Image (tube, rainbow, N blue to C red):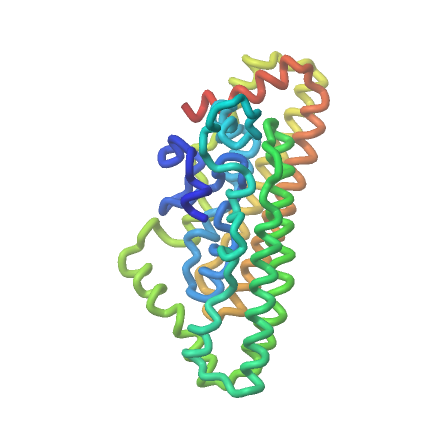
Length: 316
């Protein structure tokens, strides 16, 4: 999946929308490319760098596009013209078009660690089945068309996060049931799966703490002067723009305040933290999207084109 998702995505290694530690907010038109891996890496292994790297900067990137049309063209349907088409990463490959790439939680490793009884094994099988269904739900949220406007990008973000929430809703009760059936000794062995990664992360402090990673977006000042210079908004448009800016600021503060992954130690507790974070992310995207759509509806076609031009210039 990694190769397909990143193919043809020139310049992604240095974009301002790239996350600390080499993760990506966007790959082409796809938001949160490794969503399911990030969910279970944190839940099982305690590796939260991928998951907790998502926050307000990604909403900002949704508004002020992280890609221009020249880069989006790699993902658009090609018209046959009697010659070989350029091979890049079509939309159906961004999330893995081969179903063999859909994998669930590392059930074998969990079983080896806890040595479940027959009854516990049935609960573990149920958890494994739920996790495979959850992975399929997230894969199905892969975009089927390119979003070329800011409202469209936020709509794509909302759809992706909603799919992640549905995935968590499937896996969380199965995980709680399995974990609740374990003895204290088995729980300790399950919890220990994450201890080595946690100690390693603490020793080298790669990318800073998780709290700093998701709680302190920097360098994303609201481009008020550029919007004003490009759009020359009317009084009505300026009022809607102010609502959008104020809404974005509130969402930024809410996501920063909700960034508290550091003290969560058990897999069920980490999954509960995931769900809470996704709730805040989804609320934020919905709020900003509503304000953005109100503002956008007041713009002329020329003003919309000027607004969309802010992002690609910013990423050059």
